[in-house]
Image (cartoon, rainbow, N blue to C red; front, side, top):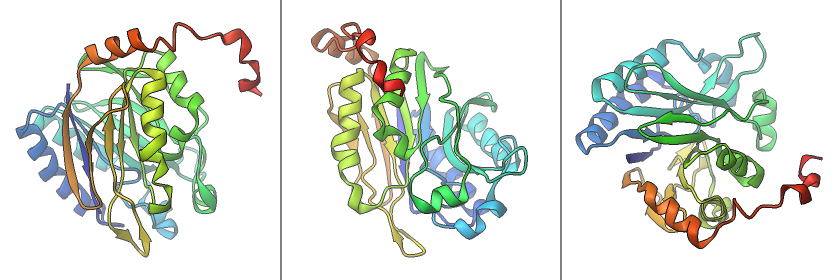
Length: 265
């Protein structure tokens, strides 16, 4: 499968402008044969706009989802994007990611479970379900968001449920460079899967982002990595690489679950 990561500064608070930019990027990705395009965390309305998050929140099947579905159909690819999801019962919104397929309908959806920092805990409701992987283009694909990947249990759960690829929209600042530098490759190796980690770049209302988006193979190799500027990373993922890595490092079949009871405390 050929996939792309769109590392972007975005237009905080400007949903219509971001959708227009997505149209251009999706067209460029489709022209390059991309089947799956990943956008950053809270890309649709912006990350560092806490005072506007309720206003910017949308339903999973709202107007932006419909527009993205139209783009996915027109360009023949799946689009994964981060957005503020309106709470169905009127509570604080969720920090969510949704994947809309080339059929124009949702393939997968996930609400961030591990909220990071005072702002996120003040503004968002935490998700309480680690959604099962979904199927697309011959792959089982899991969804996490940013801080979630720093919990090895979350990625391992997806691996045990058959995921071969994890999509992770993120909003990472420069002091946390160890995440794409160390943690993301470790998660890929220890679970024998591909990890796609898509960050913002630039500055939002005084908050600087690292950039550094990357796609990491099951052997820990960075198949593509961005610098600090806007980028569209395009990579071909080979499922046979997973099989070869599993032969070398058989972590999953050699597990001893009966010894790990403390993990559920």
